[in-house]
Image (cartoon, rainbow, N blue to C red; front, top):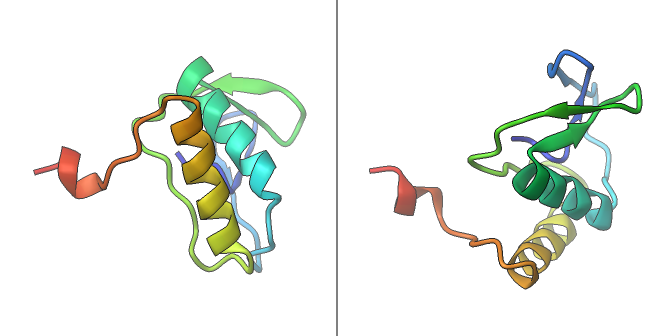
Length: 90
């Protein structure tokens, strides 16, 4: 699940021409919604159901480090385990 990308009503990713910065708290809110509620907001203002086995963040965003730091701290504060992908896929 890419919480720093937009989705359309059919659950398809809306690709940006150039990666723009995302508000770290918005990314955290979307990640928590995906993990806890199984939903993500769409570009038309609705929510769709998703299965978020993993949370992915793009490292090419101008503020990627801030987003990742906020996301990790916020997820852990909410009791969501943050582990390396290599720890769960063998």
